[in-house]
Length: 508
Ligand SMILES: Cc1cc2nc3c(=O)[nH]c(=O)nc-3n(C[C@H](O)[C@H](O)[C@H](O)COP(=O)(O)OP(=O)(O)OC[C@H]3O[C@@H](n4cnc5c(N)ncnc54)[C@H](O)[C@@H]3O)c2cc1C
Ligand code: SF4
Image 1 (cartoon, protein in one colour):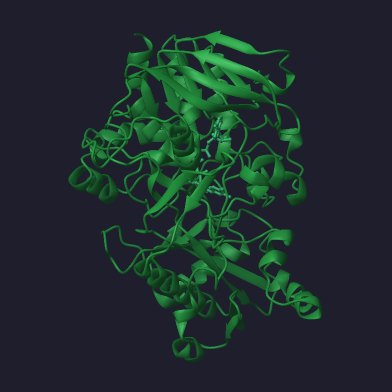
Image 2: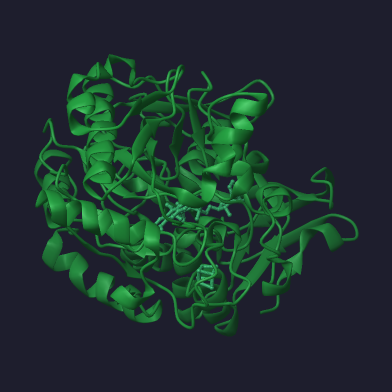
């Protein structure tokens, strides 16, 4: 695929096009492709670098800085939750773990019923989901491809009689190397980078890497273009970029699009911009087994436990459980203890199985822009969500014990260890709260929400901004609530839903 690299620009760049897409992840790639296939002159501007298969060397110290926002160090403002997001051509789809689930019908119905979303019910969205699944070759992971870590989750579910099952993924020709989160060296991921962006480029779209959009420009309630900077290899601005267009699609993620909207001073009469950030925050639990698990081998997440997951708002069952095995640096950073104690803990690494409990959260966070221009994520987990976190960690511990773990450990200050169900039942779980347990989030959502009521949403059901004509959103920002599952298929499909409306505006 031919990508124009902003770092190679000699002098400033000025362009006139029909449409601009900001960001090239799940949402941006689809918007770009659809605009190009409609015969429009469209460019994508992506702040991160362009990587090819040869760049994915499976090293955490190389790949985290290259593929992730803030070199993998993004976190909520209070540092309680690490927030991992992609940065680069292909966005977060480059390093995600390929899980594919459609938006649950119950969530789509909730959005229609309580959030004023029109034209995006289960029947209306189905063709889009089917088309995306075809494009990305989504299929169920066969049991023979399930690694030991995932198989222990299955065993735990079956021993307890809990609801669980295999997951579908977008991968073809997977070598089961286990490095999905660092980019795929075997080109097996059927993602935005490999599939959708090349389709867009083949249809005539241009993709610029290393170009950070700093302002959306608008006049008299209509978009006119964007102001951006080209970044050099070290990430420093080295040239100015101005692109004029009739339609702009924000697809810079729930954090990036909200920050850009705020920095641009978009009209916000009802104080909605950047609000209602959801994260799916997750904590982990590790089980030590007598035999080798070697969870770093094989497909990282191929089985789920949905026993504690309901999509009813306010439910006390809002936990989604999947395996979560870290590479050595990540594992060492989470492993409790110092010095010799830490080394002893790391010696158990090959015999560990690790699960994560992600909360289908109802906490309302916020994205704002800091003094240095960077996005700031404000998120204080509600009491109800903290109770879900505790429930989830306890459920993970129970699953690991049921699967035969000799000891189960919840990383916390201090770490909590149990060896039996009786000890787990006696454990006071009030410690399970932000700052006391390490939390990670990989699914930011919300912030520029869909809906017909401008007092409660930022964009209409078509994805177009309530106050600025020609400005569209096509990424995870759109979702009025959290999903309770992996978001990429929902994002790809909602971008497909928004695209025809952007095409119409771009045609003028
Ligand atoms: C470790 C990890 C594992 C995951 N695993 C899964 C999974 O298995 N299944 C699943 O469904 N989801 C998974 N996800 C989440 C999923 O990948 C994301 O939800 C999805 O890709 C988000 O799509 P998006 O279009 O909203 O944004 P992204 O895909 O994040 O793309 C946004 C792009 O915009 C760019 N950008 C931001 N600001 C600007 C700017 N100002 N100017 C220009 N460009 C900008 C960014 O660099 C980025 O490339 C995972 C995420 C992570 C971090
Ligand atoms: S497990 Fe499969 S998809 Fe993941 S990095 Fe390895 S080969 Fe690629």
